[in-house]
Image 1: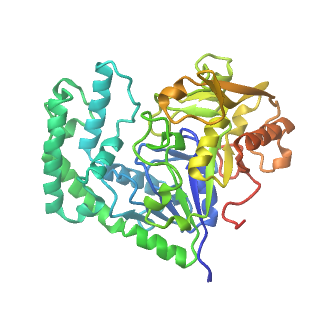
Image 2: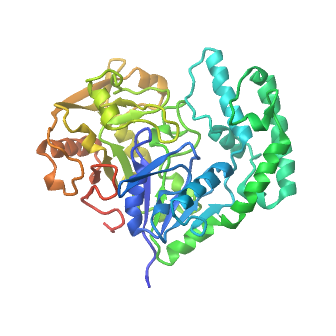
Image 3: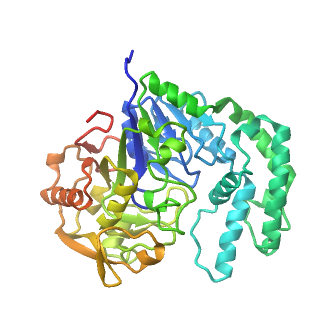
Length: 458
């Protein structure tokens, strides 16, 4: 039996998301007894490749693929009961034990069809009004967080109380239908087949939403828990805990490229608030970082390349890297590695180390460019600005490095990397000020190079 309290590691995306966090969480779970999701909703997507078999997760922590590990969904997550049960069914179909190992915070705000309807209607209104779309996934994440902050959210604990749930739902529908019909012209907007069962003439209906929620409640209630208490107890008995972020730092609602961001805090500090533990229990922060940059949806992207033209470096990244969103299937915009962006990410997360993913995607490029700063209004700066308007005016300042022709796919030893690949990684370390402790050389769990293990004390 362990005689000391456990060690806890936070994994965050340090660019715009899609950095490959799922694989690394799965890999690190070998050393953990619990994995915690602390923010976001089912707009996130993690793809795991284990023994050649691909699994996509959206809500359930990636640690679910390791037998015997307890998985927690913290209070900082906005929870879609429908998507949670759908994901559980898919995993159980594949032979993964889920319900006995999954603990869901009673304090999670719920995502219901009304939230998705408002999300879709707002994006349509922005487009019709000539404004730039935010690029949401249309899954109701933002409206659910709005309800949380406005103190009107239906929470997972309300699933235990049908009468209370019904009263709160009626209040929400009154507000949402006023917004949809009165402000967003919902009667003129086609919402699609997914929302059709819950709407009539542009308005949301109480009965189908309530009936479905009560049916889902029967399956979800056994998994509800005081996650904060359970995590603190697990730490005291010596369990190692892994906190899994969704999206990426530059999509954080406070520290990202606002307003082209998600609706939650994606930074490492939110692991404490979004799970119910003290910040002193976060011992190491690992930033997951692609060997280049990608971004889904709208917003500024200083190092973006032409990625749709065959034969260009951006096309190479997009094609070889299979750059499409796990959740939406949307193509990801591609560009060179941005060290000035990474320095901002390191600053707001307090990164202890980096994991570089998709290094193998750069195999075969004759030369690589690395952004070390920007020219903004005649000034040279070495840190990503805070405002989207300023970022949009940034002109990247590049250094050029030689590429490599040898394959790095599947390598598990640092010394076997091509010399130019090592020089590229060393330049990233120097430019960002953060040491590289892990390198991923393919999506497969085992194809990982480690120079320092995050769960081992300094």
